Image 1: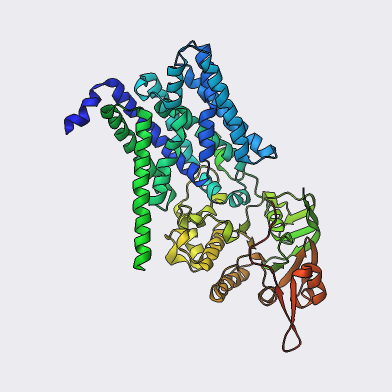
Image 2 (image 1 turned 180 degrees about the vertical axis):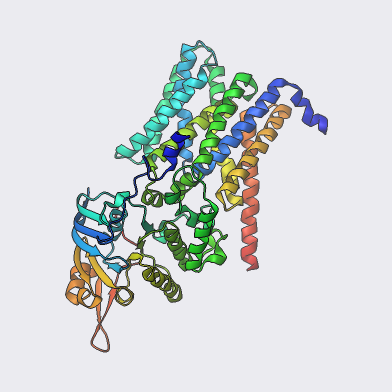
Length: 282
Length: 284
């Protein structure tokens, strides 16, 4: 039994990948609480896809070097996240429509750029679905630093973000800097997406933000507990997913996301069954 | 950490500067207030005053602009024209104005306890980057005592009854140390016992000198339980005693075809807003 658990860990790339996946899982899950409560799942998904042209340009400019990609992704994510906020505030179309138009366009642009390179399928697959076993020490360090920053800011603005999610009018009557706080949250989501890029890739990113947080939402009725529980679920799912990926030889990002999904389905089934049983008992 | 202190101190920089109160000025002064949306005027040339500790009922048909009026007074919405002053200063600088939302506009499944929601009211006084202290939690408990919800402090907000939910928001206003409380249709969906409990809390606020503006549909309650009544239909139809304001001519003026006038046994008129209780349809 122990052998089964320990055997994969003798490979350094496996250890690095696991550390990265757990870190990313925790960061996304904590921030994901706000994504779930404010109904920003589509925004997160679209934003993840919109990073692709930035990655593509970085990839073309750097001649395939991976190092600068993180910064290209970061720049693109922050600019497009703030851009979408500005567009949805000024344009006469609904916010989700604006998101759909701009972010799908960005995604298409990314694919077009990458497809101009010959080795494109392999590289595109890495961008889309992640490459957690290719995580280097440098990547790990960046993940830890920026992930840590996200957690610190979430902690510092805990009560403000909570008010903004629950009652924006209260936030306004308390004269909180609503616009600034909204932008901070959006940038945090962008940063979380970038640090998760290598673990799950842009296509599955939204699952890390939404699924563990939604699972925790079913289980608790306090925000800080929801965040803690979501982080725990994400961490355990990341480890479990990587083991599954190792032994069943499936893509690691997909395995992690599938584990999160399975946990959600089980929790959802149990809680709804529970509620129905209690309703019958009454 | 002087840099951080700038962020923390609610009196400074980008948390708006809470205005000092001018005690000689009325708690609320509205002059020529007009709000125009793309679709037309939501409020047209309103002028009235409110004295400290007064209880004002705001009645009028759906779409009369009650919610809009409240949002302007709360400093959340900017008027197109006219003047609004709370204790002698522009409302946008005050943190002493509490807005109690309609219950249908609240996400009751939000992961928060009653105490959590009441604590949200403290945030204005706390300032950014500050965590609540022992004293803040004490104030929250006091506020919950005042509205008689102390036993339910740790309940999830969804588990409260309609009346308890309203009183929780009043407790939040108390924790905010609000001096002007705006309540949007708080009676909607409450049975008469829950309404009585709510009014006994409002009585307490009155005795503490808190000013309350309440939007409602029930003209009878408006006449019985409030110091003054305002009849609104985009413009101010009347404000004052219930007997003077709620006369048939005014009511037909305000409600038009929505009004049912029923002759009562003793020659008085039983009046009813025939429209449903689903709140204003203002687009803000």
